[in-house]
Image 1 (cartoon, rainbow, N blue to C red):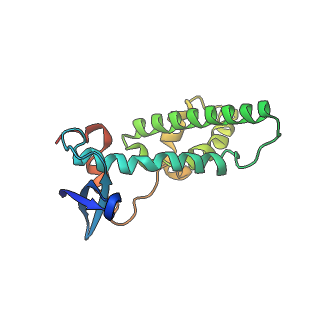
Image 2: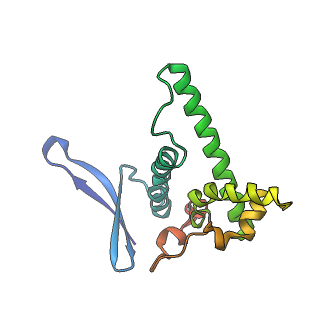
Image 3: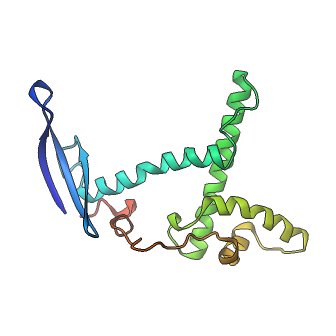
Length: 172
């Protein structure tokens, strides 16, 4: 890892920024910040924050694609607000469910497929109708393989981000 102060821009627009570089496999990943003080923002924390910032983008993509928020049912402001709020509430419950399944399986949250958890609710309802008395998180954890709830690890998936999770990133 390298942590340096560099100049960007030219002329009057020239400014100092902090460049943090991390070797990931054979590739250097570079992160810029205007926080120059490593005491205020340790390099490990900066890397973890960059990784986590995409969580918001993934949330919007899931809500639009999976929960159908790409289209509004009605054009009135009240209807749009109701649809937005209700969809975000469903998404929040879904994320909590994924987190609980991850906890039961002792896996990081990132290994749980939000889409497959959502799609597996149908199978849980059918299991309840057949007399299954497990809770939804237990059912998903028990059947995680055949329901596809756990994402398969890709080649070279172990990354700097897994070794530096956000919760411990501030520890140097």
